[in-house]
Length: 92
Image (cartoon, rainbow, N blue to C red):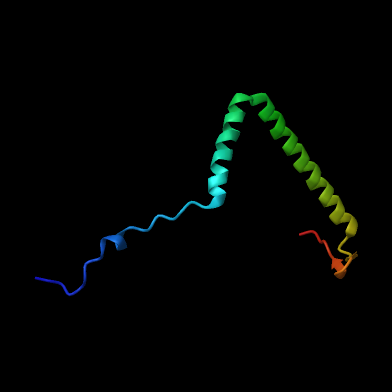
C-alpha cells in the first residue's frame, strides 16, 4: 500500500544551524574572563558591584528630582545647525 505523499527529505527534518552572531562571539570570552576575575578577586568584585548599585541609585534619585522639578513643562533647547528642539519630561 503506497501513499501519494512524498517522503520528507533529510534536510527538511533538521533546522539549519545558524552562525553565531558577532555579539555572541565577543560576549562569550568576555563573560568567561569576568567570571575568572570574580573568582580570583572576590573582594574587588563585591566592591565593584556595590559601587555600581550605589551609582545606579544616585542616578535614579537625581533623575526623579529632575522630573519633579520640570513639572511637565517643556524645555526649549537650541541645537546649532538643527534648530530649536522642545523637550518634555513627565513622570509615569
